[in-house]
Amino acid sequence: MIWDPKHETMSRQEMRQLQTQRMIHAIQYCYDHSPFYHKRFQEIGLRPEQFKSLDDLKRIPFTVKADLRDNYPFGMFAVPQKRVVRIHASSGTTGKPTVVGYTQNDLEMWKDVMARLICATGVTDDDVAQVAFGYGMFTGALGLHNGLEKVGCAVVPASAGNTQRQLMMMQDFGTTVLIATPSYALYLAEAAEEAGLVMGKDLKLRVGLFGGEGHSDRMHQDLERRLGILATENYGLSEVLGPGVAGDCYCQCGMHINEDHFYPEIIDPDTEEVLPMGEEGELVLTAMTKEALPILRYRTKDITRLIEEPCKCGRTTLRMEKIHGRADDMLIIRGVNVFPTQIEEVLSKFPALGANYEIIVSRDGYLDKMEIKAELVDASLLERFAELEGLTRSVHDQLKAALLLDAKIRLVQPQSLKRFEGKAKRVTDLRNEKYLI
Ligand SMILES: [Zn+2]
Image (cartoon, rainbow, N blue to C red):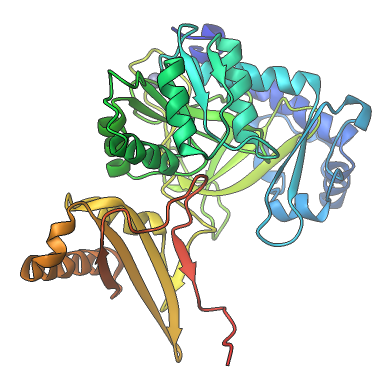
């Protein structure tokens, strides 16, 4: 079923017309209501009436995360506080968090785009959906929650953590849809296996709606096999909305973008040039219909590519590939750019390795060193030295071929690495730690 056939199946030409209209409106709206954008337009001498087509968009400067931080907390809001009905914030690793707000209309739009994505995965009002994201300031839990209710699911707001209770509720309530980060879902799968629960009998899960972090193809397969589900991914970020920007349909061939609300561009992160359709680069999003916090050309730092070919599901919206890496997560090791996802991709080719790994970067004198710990699937391999050494060498060589870097590989006991109930932290960078003597 398609939730909103009018917007999800319109021709490319109709979509472009609608986007042009909405973009013109968004730019006028920002000029009239957002002191931040008004000032910015004046600085570059742009008057909203000069904006006539989507091609003029490249004249608009990018918005970056620092803009939101510098205007903490409400400096980028475009409505009086009276009209704001919800506030969320993303945790800042350094300094103040990024604060976002929503009007009543924004929340309605959010529910609607979320319902489209949920519906696209095959979830219906017959489903029982357990939300294992942490509630609170994070947009993930409430974003999914409200969309699931709109579709008509019975929503279980379990929140994150307390794995045994999660499993108990899944059994007792007959949960069919799991909402979690992929790493926590995998942790739940391990816990279910340990408790001797049988998929399809004790647990009735059939669909996973995963987000909050990316996952490799291997992790995807693991999730589908171990939980007996269709594992789908959805994408969003609080600065632009929260979840609801894009998501997999049941065909799992790229995430459909709700592009009547969020206009996507792909740029070269270094030159900031807009790249042609299909090329890989940084995703830039404009939220064209938001009232409380309109945002123009937001640099997401996420690396992906867009797909224009029509999808088998019947939707005609552009799709985006799963995130290939984050410009922010990029490590520079001995002058070489490395994305953790590249390492994950190599590790995932070894069936003897599990889905959990850790990357530790340190410095010896002036030389960067990288160590990768990966979990084995079978603990007995640790006693078969020749085999273990062979496997270690082959992981080392394949990583070297892919990254052009030497890394120390340490294969460890199954389930010995730290587990995360939220977003997994894969990288420990010790290079900037002060030495304590
Ligand atoms: Zn599709």
